[in-house]
Image 1: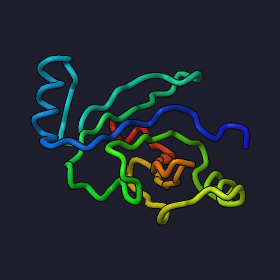
Image 2 (image 1 turned 180 degrees about the vertical axis):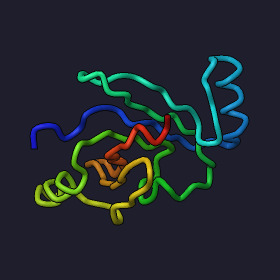
Image 3 (image 1 turned 30 degrees about the vertical axis):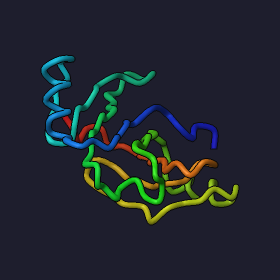
Image 4 (image 1 turned 180 degrees about the horizontal axis):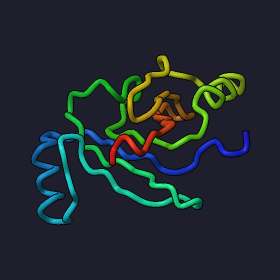
Length: 128
């Protein structure tokens, strides 16, 4: 596989009060926030619409487990199934099963320090 990661898909972090954080970022920095955080729009090399998510999450979220970190990075990928299989063959720990939604497929791995990384094969048009 030549293109494993095609961009940053998003950044999620734990917050004591996610709603207050979204409001603060909206008021102070002008982020267009919604219940999930903020979607940033950009174009890839071919001119296609692409998105990156910024997401404050509840302090007690279990979504980052087994990582104990206060954040999780999300990377955009082209072929999630193929990539996860290649990573397994290379000895990378895959966490859970692939989940599919209207806006793409998701899979998770652990890096050498135990940080959970989210891999996203996006369907950006679902956000338009």
